[in-house]
Length: 245
Image 1 (cartoon, one colour):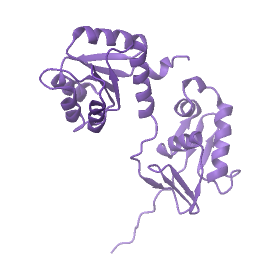
Image 2 (cartoon, rainbow, N blue to C red):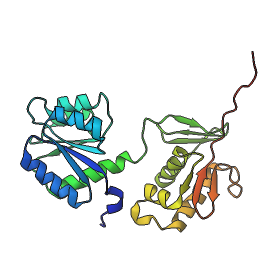
Image 3 (cartoon, one colour):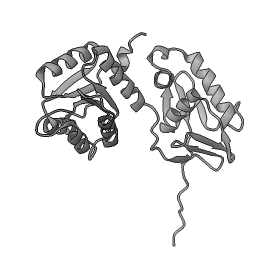
Image 4 (cartoon, rainbow, N blue to C red):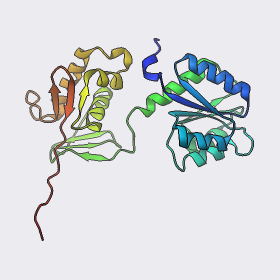
């Protein structure tokens, strides 16, 4: 599988471990895959660097002095939603449950291969760029409502079934409502970097989506084509009450 260098290039990874050899090992291999890497020697140092340097992901060791990984993770979650992968020498269900309950995004047991860690990092970053279950219901107008938490679309009060790719496409359009989304950007977000030039594929799925949510797919009111650039989802502006008391 071809490595998506452009997608990951520039992503900042924070490694938190009290063992310099482990930091060097992880840093070397992640940098080979195009990541930028910084490190912290303990939990307190990690908290400071998360606040000041805003990493895209944290690789956090559990067994550390002063403040272990679990406590560090709890402190992180008080002010940040940055993705965290926990590292530990144990492989026990209780530790995994504790890590996920505290807000970890993934869990990796030492020893691990460089490829395994890199794949986990990429997978977590991919998920972070996807659809968040915390998004609220969007009432586009009286005819169209989108519930991101349930992945449900209602058209004229009836549930419309969308395929996963159609759903991801709709999500990115609505998330950037009233802004023009370049075709290349949509292709990368929905299908991946390797598809960034497949404009015909995007046209096909735009047509699929229009056929399901538009009243007249030949004369769309929601998904507009910006010729030579991309597409724009039209979100009607709410009318303000101008009546004075």
